[in-house]
Amino acid sequence: MSTEKNAASRIRAGGVYLVMLAGAVLTVAPLVLSALTAVKTPGQFAAESPLALPHPATGENFRTVLDQGGLGRALAVTALMTVFITGGQLITSTLAAYAFARTEFPGREALFWVYLGTMMVPPMVTLIPLYLMFAKFGWLNTFWALVLPFVFGSPYAIFLLRQYFRAIPEELLGAARLDGANTADILVHVVVPMSRPVLGTLALITIVTQWNNFMWPLVAASGDTWRVLTVATADLQTRYNAQWTLVTAATTLAIVPLVVLFLVFQRQVLRSIGWTGLK
Figure 1 (cartoon, rainbow, N blue to C red):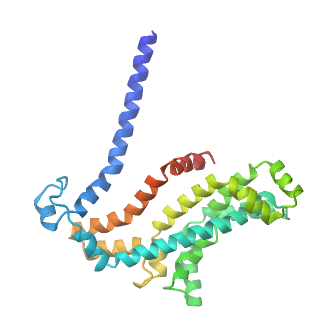
Figure 2: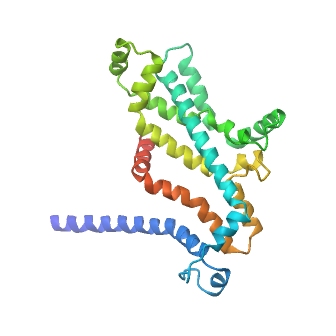
Figure 3: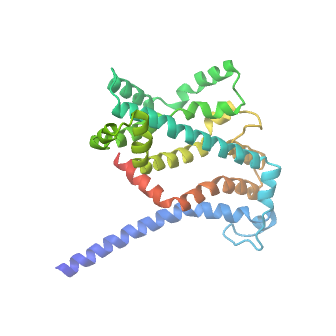
């Protein structure tokens, strides 16, 4: 009987692994195909199977999209925007979350849940009012138009940090107060060091979200000066619609930074998935 159960469990485990393998192949295959196409010449791509290996590989497609397509500047703008927004999100969300978690003031809970309720508002609803506001201030087609709507925290970030801050034992904070620490000292020297895992999670989520942000940068920065990577890539897909080697070179350049980020911080990424799933 036990032998039959072991055989059945092995079969189930084998089936699970096959499903996971199929999912991994379906996820990775388009990325690999894009990278292979990006290092082929147009002649190779037209004459051979898309799955054929390049012989020899060429970097001319990347040089073309970086120089002529303006992707190099868009890459720099996107990196600057992402770093600025991520830093702002971490600072402002930490301050707001600590206030909601550990500071007593009238209407704290009601204000928090009203603010959290804004997560249910679709971004498209606020797109036009936000555009009109920035147009009135004359901030369209500027760096501030890209970062100001996102730099001062977000409901999700504040909720995530608040839940983590509430789990910190009150005894630790009380001991710090007995040692003469004020609120700022407690936040900087006690709460933030203990919250590195969740802050790393928030940083990774913010980086990926802002790197892939498309709709607001498309509306707020219509010129070439502050064009971000997603908008530049979409423009290249229109401009070089029939030249798939150039299109895939642009999309590969857009994906590579996120892939490198995952490879470097894969443990933190997996931990963040588990943490956000629990919360």
